[in-house]
Image (cartoon, rainbow, N blue to C red; front, side):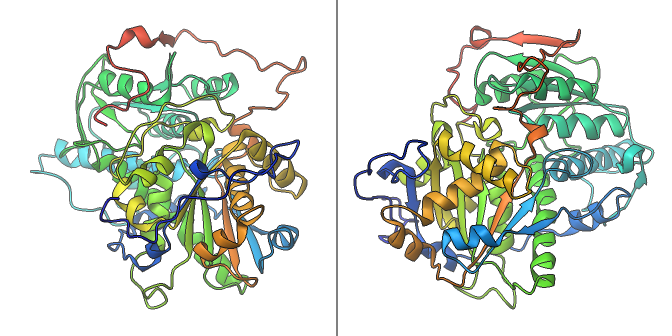
Length: 469
């Protein structure tokens, strides 16, 4: 086993029990669970905090709600359960606008400095520096350099967030959409004015195509400046890092930190103190990286072993972080079909991986049936959640109930008075899989002259492999 994983790493269980008819109460198989309790003793480097103040200065900013659900606490046998509801964030139905707004702001600020003749990269910006109120409360960098096209790949929410922020900042966006993204979600990206290229392959292939379109501009000083296939300078704004491309993904992760700062304040207001477990839906791992960075950072109330357990939750069809943790190295997995479209990623971000490897307590892969049940149950409790957001509930149910639950609870350090925080990262509008979205029960097909198709034959690389992985 890799030396960073001592002998207390746990990834085995008893053989699966007979499945419940809806699949939601079946026992976890050996490939569906991983735990390493020593993660709580790892300390992350301090993270930048400017993004939170930047977001707070936006006219339309408001913390999303943290909802306490006593019935879930009773079901799970813990003290308190809170759900962070990201169904409405800066005018979009998912948390991704936090990362996109901060990253695009930083890119344009650096380009402004470069255009003014400053040498090298800009110094870190103070909150609100160079920002004016744009339409719908978006931040706009004043006096920016030549307009650019922001290029990105998405399996749903990130692409729409980049398209929305780019439009509000007077810039362009070109979004590569992977196979499996709901047509309504694709149409929403087009509705933001973005050029959309649909890729007849998985997310990793869309990432590769977006990098090519951006001219492989990299992310050095000035945050890129390729021309690729666009008529204007292009900047790749991807939330998945790869070797040589980690600076802009790092800004996106910084933007996500606002969510955790809000949780701290909201728990304190509820008299709950620090959480004992935080469940995070995982795609490439950028949000989980932000969670690890936040909860493993040094502080007066976060000594060795004092932080919460951090649980990564993935669909069984795309459990790249779980498999990487089990192997002790970052690996790619072939992805399948899942309603949790925003989590359908085959390779962990290279930027996120070191933090995930060192700071995650556990990872669990959940079935489609578990996810669908969680969507229904959260809706009944007044929390509108899409399949990706509800994955956190599916994950804690898988971890804390059923055969072997006592051992899993012990690995997570959870007692009957524990406080749990579940991140519901999207609302139903972000990912309508499983919903009746038209009068005839079929989602409308997206349309628009800016839609193009790229299939597996457009690249010599294997579709299931991340570029640079």
